[in-house]
Length: 141
Image (cartoon, rainbow, N blue to C red):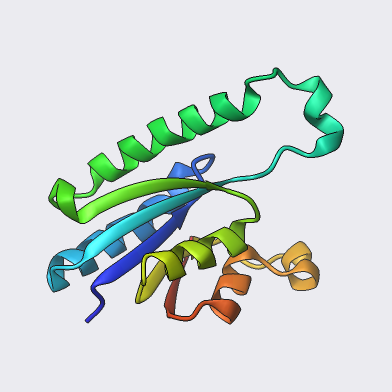
């Protein structure tokens, strides 16, 4: 059974993340495992840096950390078995790095239905499935 479960979420779409969090909570509960929720903040493009407030990155991180606290509180696991983290960088790269750092044995994530854009560019879920060193469960919305 899976003992260390990672759930990547997009705090801009919390309803999309809910099925993954619920599924991962149930799996962690059944196996006495731990759950780690990760949100990845994108890097602010250099060309936009002069147009945003000087503390923009700090504000974004604070907002994301507050959102993570709310998500971890929703999971019905004891507080010592659920945690959240905010990383910054490329989404799929940071998800894979967090999985390695926490020795995750399962990543549970949701994905949009494929569209033309993801057929040509690939989706974050697709990249995680291809490059993760652990099992990946992708739930469709």
